Length: 139
Image (tube, rainbow, N blue to C red):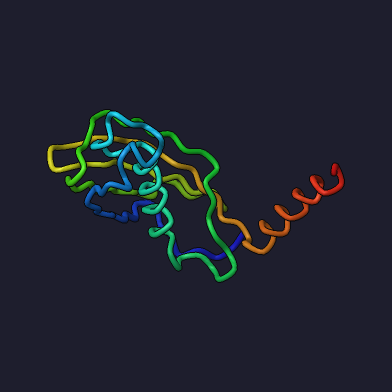
């Protein structure tokens, strides 16, 4: 296992004003284009966890999502500000679990969790290339 400087209970918060590119129209849904999209929400939740990990793992290592669950309960309009809070709640070896909550100016709009694994970046890329080689042999 790699040496990490993370501790359970660490929190990272991101705030963002919902722009046009964060709305549902940017993800193929017309008719409700003034609403904050779930894909944009998930992206911010992932960003918050990645930022929390930051430089707290050795060079050459990254974290990757293994599992993600999100409940997006309330709509948020373009122009409002969303706040995502990621909290590291469990560390077991290379396994990290984060609880996440999202608010806008009117209250909580979403909750979720994500499980991330600390992996060697070079090994991960090598594995992806080996996997892609099977496509070349099929052609």
